[in-house]
Image (cartoon, rainbow, N blue to C red):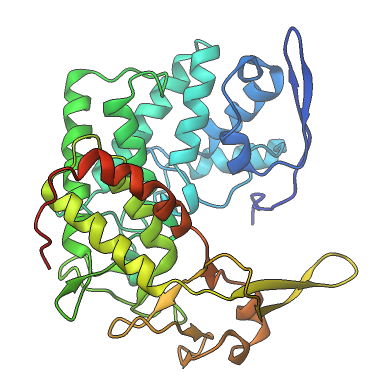
Length: 369
């Protein structure tokens, strides 16, 4: 008998009730619900019902599957199917925010509701993430490992940065998560974070003798930029590199190696920014995006390409045939509208860099390639 588990982007209404305020959260995705500000809502009936779903979706190994709208009500049949899946390890991941966001939700629940199951699930999730880390400090897309590009060190969609941000909060912000770690676990967290940062430094790409940025995925043995899906070729990433640099800039007492990595990456962002254009979404009468256009506009803020050539930083675009194209207009409509080919995320790096430089670069380390 085939059983189907809901994996959809439909939303339902979650109500927040507090003593003084009655607010509605409308049309929220699971990720947005996880980001909801901590407070009494996490002791509400709705929040507790959602937490039961989160516990059901967690696998015994500690991880969660991705792209699940966990706040959607489950039928009895779906709950039974999830119970049968709990021993499975085939879909556990930190991709697309999975595992990290469920841990955040359970932490917010535990601060309001003293249910030890939330704490246990959180710690199991943390143990899963620590076990999934490579000895070299990187993380694969899935753990246990899946064959194929999934084994690469994965910066794509901020997988590794999300994990390291969680570990950093656990070690440096003891009140951010409601679960207090024992000394043994805290030591593991510290070690994993240090290894992760070391991996980031080792994967920063050297172009013509100069440090630049990062690819969305790197080989887990050689550290070299590598391909993922057919349209995700080895390249320098404007998007993923931004979040990596913001993480490095958040470290309280950065080493000279970290300072060197940040300053070179900032130089690269300045060098490759695209000015005078904006990306326009073309929508039909129903509001659905039917095309994406690059439009000339001298007043537009800078943007960055998602993918740039390793040898010369020239942006490129790809269809599912894996053939590079020079412009967005040259690829098919499905990929043109179904992927984020441009980003503005590096603007946050450039915004924060002057203050970071003032704080940490009073004695400027000699730049090393």
